[in-house]
Length: 354
Image 1 (tube, one colour):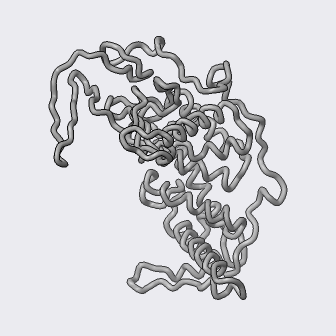
Image 2 (cartoon, helix red, strand yellow):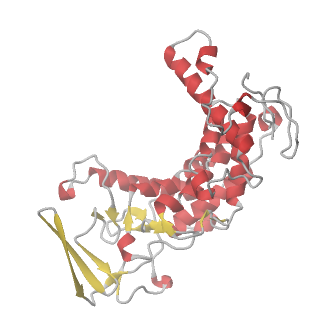
Image 3 (cartoon, one colour):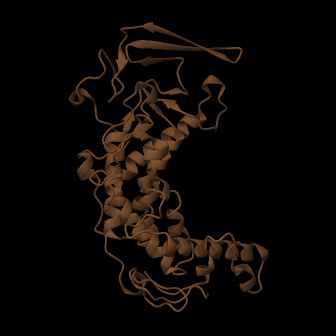
């Protein structure tokens, strides 16, 4: 890790380093004092001064966390799945203010490597190993995998991680609805499973968190094996926004799409195990009646009606999207070779005045 004031390189175990202004920030009950970066910016419009003040104050804060709270593994003390909600901002500010803080840059990269190598991630599939709702399971990959392309564009390690996540997205998470749209099979998933509960078979806007790193890959390599399903999924949501069923105004995204029937929102009747749950609203009160049923239920893999909980996956049709390559999903996810950056761009340089 590097020092700040004079740019000296510093190892994590080193006991002496150049002093930093933020070393005065201690947990002693006294208010922390901040450098007025806006006042030091010189003449200019107030909006620019506000941006300078805000961005540099954030960098000061991130550097403090990097020096005083980051562990050798890369986390900052809140656990990987919580830290991932803030540490990518270290990378974002370094991306906006390129070379302004090598401390913030190194801290973000160290966190990205630590998260990837932790038990949170299924490294073979590029997604969280534990099953759960998309709001939480998509955070480690959706946020964490954006760090490398922001700070090390074209780095083979960062691209390979995104490719693995893209493979899981295209081959496991997506399906075709009866109307031909491409949607997520559900909103609970892990690296190996999705929508195990029949009540979770709805695509929701928050599923987009899964796709956050993919635009970096498409932008860098024009990857057709990823761009095809990603575009098909996005166009399906655009089509759904234009629909007007159930009183939804045109141009507004629905809160969910029920995948087995391609219905806007939640259906009035859903299969739940061996029973049928019927929901009716009356005077703001909801009445739920349960009755046994042997009706045919959607397959948990392909959403086709079948008796029993599911039929063998070999009978399920693979997800297809317009213009999809004919080769299998693994060979479709090809890319042109990536090279590590070389020359001055490969090094951490410069530093804001302190």
